Length: 139
Image (tube, rainbow, N blue to C red; front, side, top):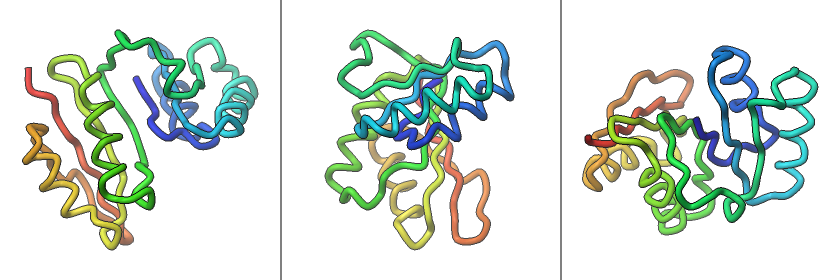
């Protein structure tokens, strides 16, 4: 699994705790976030399965069954689209990405855009102004 834009590692550590059989790459452009994710993984005894690193440290041939992210919407639409297309391309056939996006920050338009890009996307849930989207990679 991949936690894209991991911050302090909340999603990555949570995934590892909830599913003891999985390994999670936690990626962030911020070196301090990578350090904090590694510390949090160690504190929760999942450091053997949570690997925090910067994007350029991820092997180019690495593929994922699932991507989890609260994507950095505020980096701008063009940068966000480039980021998502880059990482969604790393999904294994049949894989999917789970994205949490604020409704007021473009969650609905992002859903349409992802579908238009060949990643059929559905809204799984909506609460308190947030959307949980699942974008699928076609086989």
